[in-house]
Image (tube, rainbow, N blue to C red):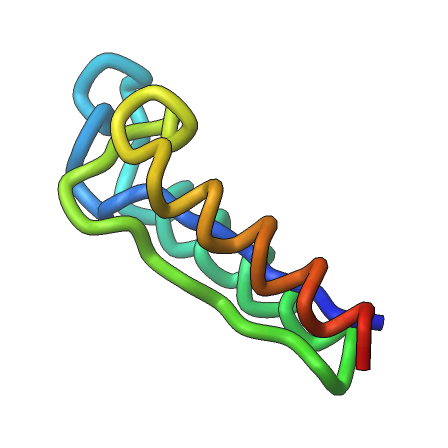
Length: 74
């Protein structure tokens, strides 16, 4: 099953959430684990994007969806 994990840019939006460095590392660890749930996966960190990747970088989200659809056709 194809899987793409999209993550925000580290450091963006972190101040507004009062994240500690430990929480950020834990969150990144969970994202890395999520990407291992499929042998056909990618983990992509959005450039210059906060938590709302669909708003900050909609092209990346569209590209990820198209990649998933393309992988499903194979």
